[in-house]
Structures are given as C-alpha cells and as structure tokens.
Amino acid sequence: MKVEFFKTDPLLSNDSFKLISDKNVLNLYRILSSYDKSTTSLTSIYHINRKSAIFLVSLLKKKYKTIDNTAVKLLDGLECYRGQRYASKIKEKWRVKDNLVKGNITIQCARVASILLTNGNLESIRLFNEILMHSNFFIEQGRQIRIPIRTDELNSELAYLAGVIAGDGHINTDLNEMKIADGHRNNSFIGYSLKFLNSINRLIERNFHYKGHMETPNPNYFVCRYSCSLVCRLMNYVYGISRGNKSRKIRVPDILKQTDKEPLFWRGVFDADGAVRKGPKSISLTTFSRELYSDFLHFAKNKKIAFFGKVEGQKHSIHILEEAIPQFVRIIGTSHPRKQENLVEYMKKGATYKIPKAIKPNKKLDDVIDYLRPYESNIYVRLTARRETTNKSELTARVSSIKEKLNHNLVKVRRERKNDHYYVCSKELLNEINEHYEFVRSWPPFKEQEIIELTERWNNYE
Image 1 (tube, rainbow, N blue to C red):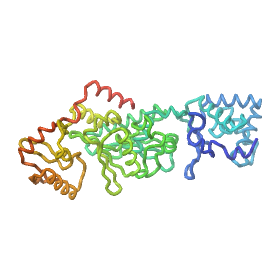
Image 2 (cartoon, one colour):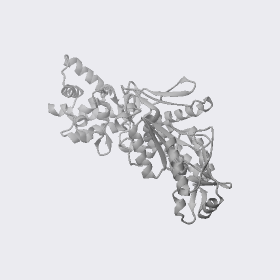
Image 3 (cartoon, rainbow, N blue to C red):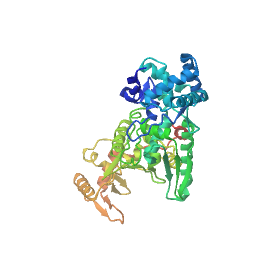
Image 4 (cartoon, rainbow, N blue to C red):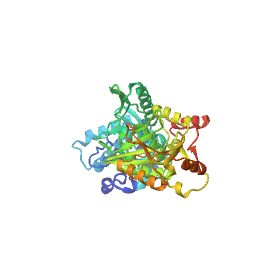
C-alpha cells in the first residue's frame, strides 16, 4: 500500500477531476468532501446504499477471502487515508467488521476500498464510480437521498432550480439548509405562490427523493425549507450558487452558460425574482449583481431579446421591450402560475404599441420616426421611443433635437405625472408621415395552439 497515494487522493487533489471524475461521471466524492476551508466533509456521514454495499463487500471478500481479513485490510487503509492511528485496533476492527456485515458503509470507506482493490489512480476512480452507480441513492441519517451521478442527469429541471435559488433562494453558510420563498403584497394572489412552491417541491422530490417543509412566516408569503446538505452542496459546488448573502454574487453557472439549458436558468431567475405585470405589458427583473446583469446582456444579444437596462448605483434593472415579448416567451417563458397567467394574456392580445414601417424612404423623418405617432389631426411625440427610463435633462435634450430636425414647434401639454406630453400641430407633416409610413402592431396575437404548446413546455420545464 502506497502511503503517498492515500494522502493525495486524486479525486480531492487533482484539478482535472474538479467536476468530472471520469468521462461524464460527476465527482460526487469532492462535492461531499471539505472542498474549501469553510466546508465540513460529509464523506463519513453519508453512506452508500445497501445494493452498492453488497457489491463492494463481495469484491473485498473475493480478494481477501474472509470478512476478518477484509476488516483488517480496510482498517489499515482507513488509518493511512485519514493519517491517524486508532488506540484500540481490536475494538476498531470489530466495528469495521460489523459495518461490513450490516452493509453500513460510508462514502469514505467505499473510496478507501476502491483504492485497495485496484492498482492505479484512474482504475480506482472507475471502480469507485461503479460502486456508486449500483444504486441511485445515498443514505443520510436513515433517509434515502437520490443522487445525480452522470452529467446528463443534470437536467433542465435542475437548471431551472438553480435559477430559482439564484433569484430568491438562500443556502446557509453551513451548506445544510436551503430556503426558497415566494409571495405577493396582495393577499388575493398568495395562492399562486403556494402553487409555485409546491411545484418546486415536486421538482426536488423527483430529482432527489427529498421533500421540503412549507412555512408561512406572515400572510404575504410562503417559505419552503430543505434541510438536505447534498442538495445544498450540488447547487453550491456544481452550479456555483453562493452560500449566505449572495445578492451581489449571483451569475450564470459555468456549467450552463451558452448551453441549451441556460434559458431554463433565466426562467428560474425571472420566476423567482422577476415581474410579469397584470394588465399593461411589462416584464422586468432587478438585481444587485453586476455579473448577472452582464450575463443577461450577452444572453439577450445572442437570442435577439430586445430590452433596455438601467444601472442606479448597485441596482441593475432589466425591462423586456414589448416588441421582444414573443422572443421572451419562446426562449425563456415562465413556469410560475401567476406570471404564466399574465404572460398568456399578453400572448392572446398581441402587441399594444404600434411601430413605424417604411413605405418609402424619407431622410428627414427616418431619424425621428420612432418618436412620432399620428394622433387624430396632430402628431404625438413619444419622448421614450422604446419606453426606456430617462432623466429630465435627457428628455429636454431630446425635445430640442426633435424640434430641430422637424423644423416645427412642439406644443407642451402639462400633466400631473413624471413627464409632460408634446404634440406637433402640422397637417402638412401629418400627411408626410402617413405618406411614407404605416404604423403596425409589432406582433399579432398568438394562435391558440401555440399558446397551448408553449404552456405545456413551461410546465414540463422544457
């Protein structure tokens, strides 16, 4: 037995195995180990399933003939691996033997056994993975916790879950508890929050064979609590969701970035922390994470989802433009019951605002047509062409620019609101606009069949 090999287990020390241990198998051993200074190792707390234990014991007995010899060899290996000697080897040997007979084998013990049974680093890793793959469950304090072993088991549901936790979830600093909250200031909508958290609960139960506990801290929101370190560690280590206060640290996980599962992450973020307003169309998200904001800039650009953003101090706001709602629903969508209901209404009604479509070119008007709309016998001036947020000085400069380019005075109509209205009273200009442009809705209502197909996709986390 090589002592140095036990001291530098490649599953823990080799960066080549940081996430993947062999081919497409996750390095679950490192996920359950103390992978940083503030993380406690759970490799001696989690146990392999009985089916895996039977398989492992049969291999050990085949090599060492008797259960007593097996216990002695395994104890020697554990001492070497842990770098400590037991005061009473006889007592410890009987404990190891008893655990082998009962199939009560920890993850660490299984790892040491895989090293004893093989000759090389990669060979021991492959055997360890084979032991784990004999069962889809780990045992923690008598509970069976399902484990994703292969990377292809990191499915779209887990990508969505990562987005939900990034948006409005919390993983405690000890990595043994996770909370997801949802609510609404209007109590008449609180039932949607309960329905949403129940759907998350079912998702976690499907993937981990574990169910959370629902709480109601106050009448305006629900909290679902999950006391499962494996789920917390998977979200922290694999998906990069920070423990503790994470609002300024969240970002798109590297494992999801620029993959077909990234839209599911964004759906989770928007469902947990975004807004889809009832009535007038508005889809928005506010975050304190500069990196998440930057990630959305790149994602939206690649997917051609038009939006305007605003940065105020540490607060970053994203507002999806109405013309981009079809792209948003087809690429991101929503699995939140309340937001889904509002989004379906948007789809049924089609675009509210009209956009100019050129009939023939007009150099004078092309630069400003986005701000102009025929209104009865006048021309209404939209100071925010894309409904972006602007300040007073920007609006004043825009009024002067439009006035100069049109060579017409703008009539101001004062309002008891943030912005005043402006009109151009010129029949000649109105006729010119109508001659060169038609104003059409940016997108028509969705067909009923597409709405049905999209909602099915959203509800199936596709």
